[in-house]
Image (cartoon, rainbow, N blue to C red; front, side, top):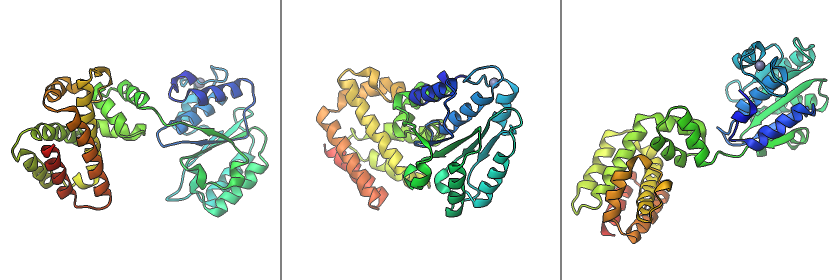
Length: 326
Ligand SMILES: [Zn+2]
């Protein structure tokens, strides 16, 4: 376990590593960025790096200190997360009491607060006072997905560190290293920018099933009969969950049409559904470029229509008929 592991946030890792190495760590950091960008992992790593017995300005992940932090039972590292929907003043008071005590294992004490934007007003005011007069050696790591929802007085007390969302390529790579097949990893990484969400999507049978329906439906669109309409009816009859996942379904449709285009122009390396090359090759022969571009427009329109509460099944049937008309 080293800083280099956080390849998805190289700027952040480098900045924190250098601050640690030069012993110029701030009293308080605000980590801001989308869910899944690695804020919590990096906060934990920073805490480990402060206490690690084996490495300087970095963490081994294996020594007793590192393991205790990972397990949440290190005496000098405190972790706060909303109780129910909010972080309450009692939690901040208890924290202040803990932080006022002498560090057990070294000079430092660390506290990590997740979802700092969810503090009650009293809790925020109490934390603010604490940030204004930080006890020596105490490091605050405040995490949020919504920095705009945080009191400016709190922001001004923190060094703000912005985590960028993962690129699709980074996401797909992360998914693959955890054992998800390349094809599914690529598709999921184009559906969401959130690592956890992408992991869940790419591992679910439902997602694989939806993509199979997309593939089938797009084949049927090229047959001049009502097979495609029948597929849609069946899809709605069999799946209660479909309505909420329709945007996902439509995204998959767009990715599929785009992939057929990619095959036609020979950009095989950019295929999203890279595990379906043979099927895509076949499809590339029966669609014209104009049809594909028009098809993508139509799917986008359908997405808008459904967001405005159009009847989902009707909207999808209309889409298929429009695509068939070319
Ligand atoms: Zn260690």
